[in-house]
Length: 141
Image (cartoon, rainbow, N blue to C red; front, side, top):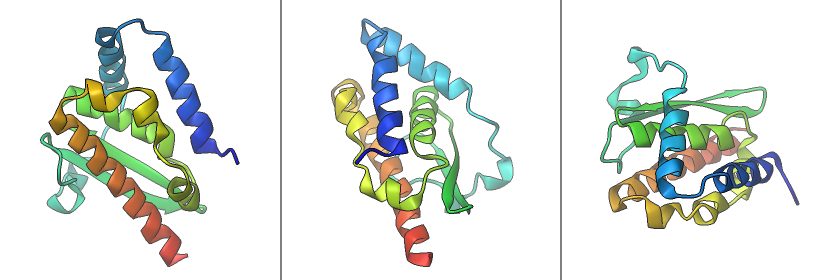
């Protein structure tokens, strides 16, 4: 069964295949982070902060028309880029699709072997938060 998230993950993997080395991939991730939309200062609260990230990360979810829409930002360039990846994959998706689709892109892109341990932990924490938001949305439906 193919869904929007699986397709988005495949497109992301294909995008990364354009780059020959990890320096170019890191630059691509950082550039994605620079294009994140502004994140309101009013939402940079302790309640919206993701634990488990070495960098400061704020993450907010809103449900509209049966889909979850995420906003997020970090004070670190590479982490903002990882946020941009996650928003590309998960924002605007159905909560059940988020829960039903494993984050295969992490393995496909070999992120765990190319990110520092603290960034890998942060990525994992952000994925956990996205799944928690999706679980809460499904439970509330």
